Amino acid sequence: QVQLVESGGGSVQAGGSLTLSCAGDGRVFTSYDLAWLRQVPGAEREVVAAITWNGASTYYTDSVKGRFTISRDNAKMILQMNSLKPEDTAIYYCAVRVGSGYSTTAFGYWGQGTQVTVSS
Image (tube, rainbow, N blue to C red; front, side):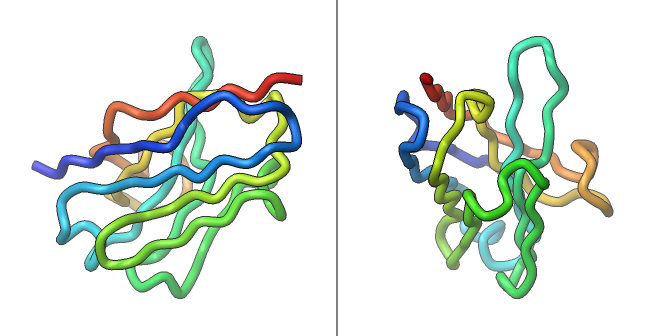
């Protein structure tokens, strides 16, 4: 069973930055495509950013392009979030690719999540 742990969330003002980290089962960080997802209460979870197993290719949802950067090494995955907006407020999860595409169902084994709150 894959176990992932997210950390780094917090409360910031609009325009601020946060760095999220995902750690866990070592084999995940050397062999699998990974992603960050987020969810607002009452809304569906969405894929924010994804990265291939070797870091060669990345994906970003349109609303975070130019502001968020996903990266990884053999031990963790990072989401650097700059120029944060109130609409970025959500619980953020890291997850492992279990299918194709960039819908929520393409990723699984997410952890407990970390709360990000951006105030205006």
